[in-house]
Image 1: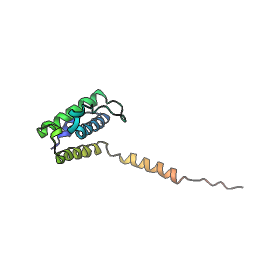
Image 2 (image 1 turned 120 degrees about the vertical axis):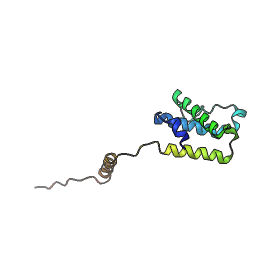
Image 3 (image 1 turned 180 degrees about the vertical axis):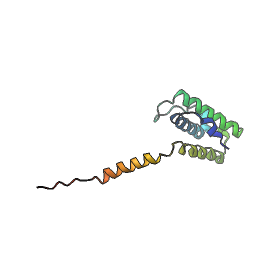
Image 4 (image 1 turned 90 degrees about the horizontal axis):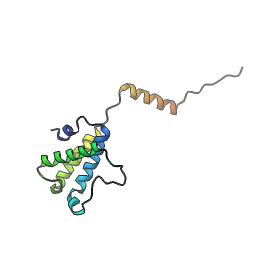
Length: 124
């Protein structure tokens, strides 16, 4: 069942990463979000998310809560961990594998950096 994958389909990777970041913050703060009235988009370490990332975050929240048939603030520890693991798994698979050509190029550059060919000139 690819619940979250369906929601993020067609979005750019930076917006998906930002949405997952703020979704994670929302899930972590969900239990106390009404009590503290803190905006989970306010963050000292990140810049403000794009409007696309914000909308995607709200879509992901809606998806999770409707799938669970309850608000995130009502999640058990097990439900919370299930969704956090799902987010982590999907996010770790966002970047495509480098092509063989890209890997070989990187290997050659590293080889040249660590084992440069030294030209020895003979005196005549």
